[in-house]
Amino acid sequence: MIGQLVHLLGYDFVQHAIEAGVVIAIVSGVVSRFVVARNMAFAVHALAELGFTGSAGAILLGVSPVLGLLTGTVVTALFIGALGVRVRERDAVVGVVMAFGLGLGVLFLSLYQGFATQAFSILFGTITGVSSGDVVLLLSIGIVTLLALALVYRPLTFATVDPEVAEARGVPVGLLAVVFLVIMAAAVAEAVQVVGVLLILTLLITPGATAERLTAAPGRATAYSIAMALFSVLGGILLSLLTNLPVSFFVTSLSFACYLLGRFVVGPMLVGRERSKGRFRSGASATAE
Amino acid sequence: MTAPAIRFDHATLAFGGREVWHDLSLAFEEGSFVAVLGPNGSGKTSLLRIVLGLVELSSGSVEVLGQPPRRGNPGIGYVPQGQVFDRDLPLRGSDLVRLGIDGHRWGVGRPDRAVARRVADAVASVEATAFADAPVGRLSGGEQQRLRIAQALVGDPQLLLCDEPLANLDLRHQGEITELVGGWHRRTGRTVLFVTHDVNPVLGLVDRVLFVVNGRWAAGTPDEVLTSERLSGLYGSHVDVLRVHGRILVVGEAFSAGFEIEEPHHLPAVDHDRPDAARPTQ
Figure: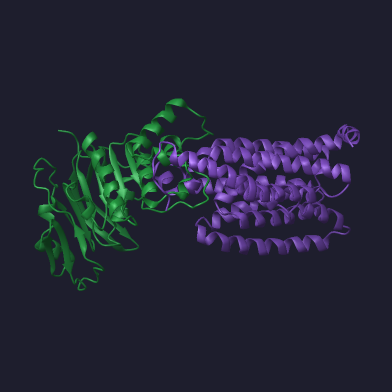
């Protein structure tokens, strides 16, 4: 089995998949932290589905589906950002935009002959089928996204956990909301390559949601989230190579296993320890609630 | 003499054609402890947002620490109206306080010994060291409020704005939070703007009062403002100011001006020992 693995790792397409997978996992790990903290699961879903519309359109026009996907997600993000900045409005706007966009996707699907395989790979992921041109594109998008995330990380954290004081301290809260939507759009376009449109939440929700269960320290939570996304993506790619079963199945399984383990086993242990350390360190008898 | 910490000059604020308050002219000198009083919807929070540079006046002008208001003014510490943190939010009290130092800066932010030191000092100054590393969402309302005050004070502000910091706290915790703010005010001699509709807990700290009702306002020492005549004028109907057991109760049935007092307003006992405090310009 090890020998088989080493043999497979020699292939270009496997190396491409792993390179792209590493960048995608890091992006997903960071972005999922904010998606969870900002309650944006629905928006992620909408971006992914309209990414599908974008790539269906791109295939119809004969251009790169990755580029079409990115165009779809970014246009949607800007639309949502322009229409629904307030939280209460946001879900309604997302629903409205998503319904229309998927309608377009259906049109593109019916116009293109022999589209079934392509559609399947966009819906359920194709990482081992990425061309070398697309790998370069994916790496570039991933690196630009990571740089943007690094730039806004601290004020975005402030705006997410404590928006009122952040605004008073001069953080451009409204602008960051739109910037984060665009970052999310890029992250969705990336993660769709691994798990597909329909399983997107496994990379853009699960790692962040699990990390929250493991620690209350925000920096550490982000590190855990990245580690978990890396584990799921790389583990998924390798298991898929060995078994010839779909990558997305393994990625979703590994990431779900992480969640269950984090939520019910590791999390209660770690957080319990953290809390007692924080709370009783100087012998104080303060009690919560 | 130093410039006033806050000066309003013929300031009017209107939302959608309705004047929240009209022609406000006053100045609070540095070192004042100002209670901003008035019923809900009288524009108390808007007043803070103007000082923070988040809302603009409809007309007139305002100066904060000698300059026009601007967003992110490092001279201001801000304790927002209490919203409790989500239970599962991955954020410790010390992280919240640290955001008060450099949360607004771009970049990732690296561990920094000097910054960590300032955070620890601020946390200690509000006696929150014992629970500063616990998830902030799991702390009680009083504990969260202590950390909010540490966050506001960690930047060593000239002016502290508190928006209903005692809401949702029981009497004991109200007393503790009041003592923290009062202690900082005494130690530093800096300015506090304390928005509240129930100021019994700040009895004895306040040396200036701004009372806003229904577009009208009155400012001055508690003695000057908190009288039956003055408040009856503000409310536009008869209001009694009663002094009972060292407290001041405002009781009225003011419906005539389209405004309703939902509850008696508890106003501070008057501190007679501060003749040096600022006079309103009016």
